[in-house]
Image (tube, rainbow, N blue to C red; front, side, top):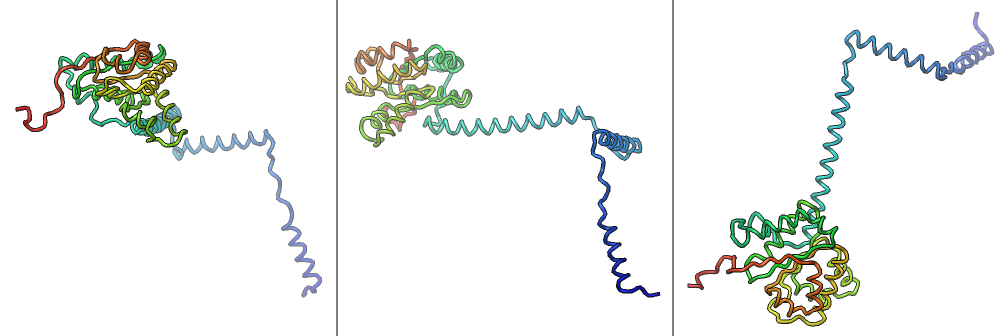
Length: 281
């Protein structure tokens, strides 16, 4: 017997109503959750018993993860150190040949001073805590003064990540007194860098001059006193012996040098640079 259109419509409505019935809500209570967890654990145990689940040494995995994490940390630290070293070298503006490996440690004059330089490097933090120290390197041109100071600088940068400025005194004068740095703020920043850098090396102080201009001598004296107050060390390189340097820089500046209780490094003898041609013959 065929159904009427009304009966067919009623059947369709009944089917749709049954489909719309809400599915049973799972029991999310702690008790039910614990029961489900136990079921999962039992299932895992069964899989392991059947040989379908691998055995894990969780302590070994933990050690493996920790070792990898330590390697990643060491790599990041090494990369950061390399970047900082590159920045410090750029700031220091050093001759790449100024390293201990290129100095003759068997030279009877250089040898003891190279040993002293290594002691200075190893105790650098100690000297900073004690108010800084000064090394006065003097001698004739070409005897290795700048090379010795530059080797100290390289070692402090590579091994101890210390900041260094190696500057010819004439360059300092040009920047601050003769307009090489044109704006006042730039000069102030440069002056602060000279005061605050971990190690300041001033090369050829009063070179070939019997006496510095009063303004330059005064500036150098104030700079050294400021560094002494900050506990910052300094290396002064000059072709004058201490008595001649005293006359060249004046009492005010020389007293500032003496306040550091400087270590005297006298490099005497002929030039250690190679000769040019045979002009001495």
